[in-house]
Length: 348
Image 1 (cartoon, rainbow, N blue to C red):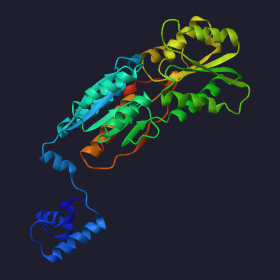
Image 2 (cartoon, helix red, strand yellow; image 1 turned 60 degrees about the vertical axis):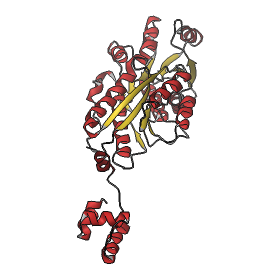
Image 3 (tube, helix red, strand yellow; image 1 turned 180 degrees about the vertical axis):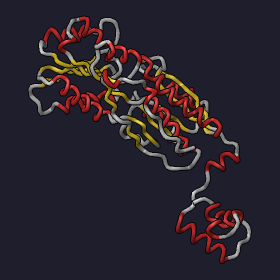
């Protein structure tokens, strides 16, 4: 309850309530007793937003993401959501600073994170795709609130995580694979960033779905998407004549799908992967990819900014975990990423 609300119930002025709460000036004992009784019954929450406006305080969010052009534009989709929220909140003294890092280099995250700190942010919004480096960076700056997008990170305590449950996503991919293939054989999971928590959990969820199906054999490949990386997949086809499906745990499924098609194996292989980037959309339209799981990256970025705004400017308790729906995309329901609804304008 705000000072104004307490004053209305106590039938006194706002100034009187302020003097009681902050113990300044003279107030009649009866009035003090009445005001404090209301505080005890209903609680008192300072209007942080109004105070910040009065002090002309800017709330700056430091955004730490992998290189925006990397991974086929996936991070740009997240950044679009961040920008949309920042634009809406800019009249309310909210701004963002952005730093990018090379996902293949932990040092890049740490160095660019420190450059971001020099901008003096009030909170950090980041994708903890490098778990050890992310922990090290955040542990070094315990004074800052932070929120996660793209992936959760066990043992850390963000004020909010806007993520998809990676295990459930992988489990759902297993279910879709089972429905689309409907026959036993060898099924491959392909990881390109095995140290990433969400990649590991998606693969684990996929394999878990088939745990009680002995006719479905699991094969795991770790591939760095460099020249010649497809050799390991070609070898797998030579060694396993019964490969029926491939699950790529990230947005690189279009690249794997093109190689499978070049081998003439698409007719016997179901391809499932993640994210509605342009390349995956085209691969699905071309019949090379059978199913995609969308994480609503635009929604993630947008929502996370609003959660930090709630904490930093409104003094509210944000939602500690917001789980993004597991959207299943087939050719029949392929739509634009922008068609997904964003967070309702609850906080404006």
